[in-house]
Length: 267
Image: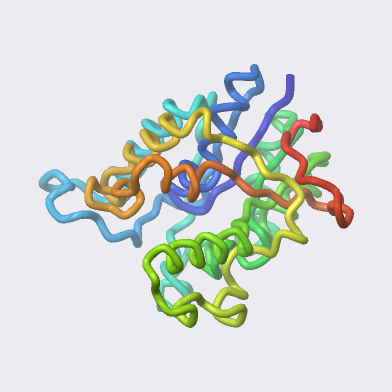
């Protein structure tokens, strides 16, 4: 059996982006370790969700531990950096924000965990963090450097299938008889996910979508009953979240070859 370490930027990223992968890896007997760079301090809590005197970071730690238990994680660690906020937010430069952290120092922290766990597989994000969030981009930088330091043999970049999203949007617009120009053009989506040609792995997680959805719900300070995540019917949710997409570093998928399906080396 192998050890899988998943490196994410904020609480709830793990459930949304790789929750199904975590569940299935744990069920297969692999060790699953979640490392979160920040405590998500810059998130916007839903109205009335925090108790009197409760800080958002406190709630988000509790939510992460609850979600991780649902997803089968054996260990959860926070690197302790401060949430940097969105692109252009002054918080990007806040002391101890993750986006402005020294890459070598942050990588050394993560590498210590990787070495302690004898990690076989590490997940990070693609080069622009999926959609440009500064903390996600920093996960890419720090994660790859930590893998080098710790000698992790396989690194996967969590991403989104840009082409699949375009097809889904086109299908929705066609069903609603909306104008074709309502679909974002390539320039609008160039910083969202990656094209299919760059993606190596498609992990089918439809069999564990109930657990993935429950883990997302555990992050109740951010994802409430009225969230679009939870308002989707089962079919729509499966279409949006039933496949988790990865790019294996250093192992491109040849043209015409089907997506690989297992992060542990099996097709």
